[in-house]
Image 1 (cartoon, rainbow, N blue to C red):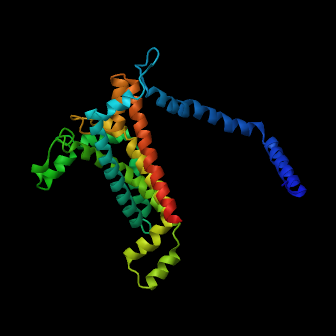
Image 2 (cartoon, helix red, strand yellow; image 1 turned 90 degrees about the vertical axis):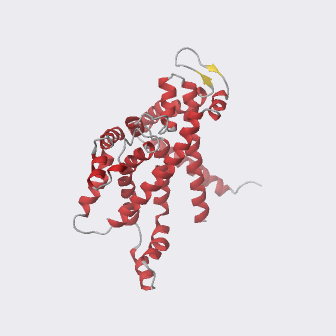
Image 3 (tube, rainbow, N blue to C red; image 1 turned 90 degrees about the horizontal axis):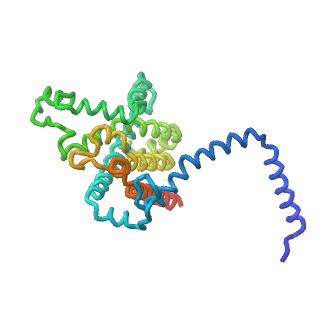
Length: 308
């Protein structure tokens, strides 16, 4: 059955209008759009796609890659250092994500109300984000020295027996680095939640208060449901930052002692650029990518189902 003549004519006219609108775009605008796209494809997307191919080869960066199929991934399954790095990454995702989100949210709630000096406190808490992770790592490495500020503070309050070489002890090194990373990240999470709290309708909270809801009920039942979008952004940012954490760990411990602070990112770097096994390092990079995709898509799908 053919479409009515009027509908066909309308479709043709709409198509002509779209083509006319495209022609009216100045060439300089196309240039501003296409040049960044080409740069992004050449410097970001192509190397990322190429890493999938390299992960299926054995290559030291010179000559032609030797095709080995899935052998690199099979070796990862029995690699004790990789398994240790994977377990450390699970601990890092939970600890880094949980602590930075909880602390950032509490800071946002405390500093959301306008009061004297609130701008100064917001700026001071966000200030660590201005410094790079490498600088943050060097700063905290000094604090954790045997005669550094951490041990000196413990001595001052009568807890000298607790003092130790925090970064040299395998039982405390990863947690010590994690604290430094959370110290930097919580200010960023605070800013995200402050932006979300500004979009919360105060009349709903006031109505719930009139109805007898306590502060916790108002927060959990009224405020949090209005910040689903912010929670999605915070989750995605936190998971991605957790999986790609490299600078602060490498600056403070280089994955040691005895691989106790080894993460997937640091092991990937060591494998690819220290032992010059780019195929094996690319296989670890693919694992990191897949983990990030699984986490983010799983969470977004769950959030979409809850909204429906």
